[in-house]
Picture (cartoon, rainbow, N blue to C red):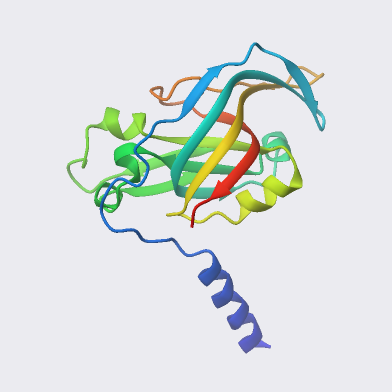
Length: 191
């Protein structure tokens, strides 16, 4: 029995290991968004407002799953994503990246490998709202180091009882409210 449990644990760790890349920018382009006109649609028990179309190709820096709370009912996964210099292993190898409580945390041992504004302007913690179980399945399998392309919308979220959650529309903001809420209509993994 113990051998079977150990084998399962090792298989899980292998399937979820980070993917290494040599130094160099993997994703040179920045995310693209355009105002979406504010159309409203229902998603389960939530009312979503399309704020902007959104397309991103980025390196996965981290994933964090959530199971409890209203946010988790809508968005069971956050992705820390990087593009430009934040997709370069030479930079990322000098950073410690973690996620918890819907936040994205970065640390470096002494001097930052880039200006802090460049680090924060080329990375983000994004709350993923899968449109269907198909997108949810792909998102759950993502591993740090993979390059992913995501298309959908940045959305604001409301409920009939007055609860709300707002998306960021900027890549340059930091702190509370700086995360994007991404309604994911398509996701493609590039290895």
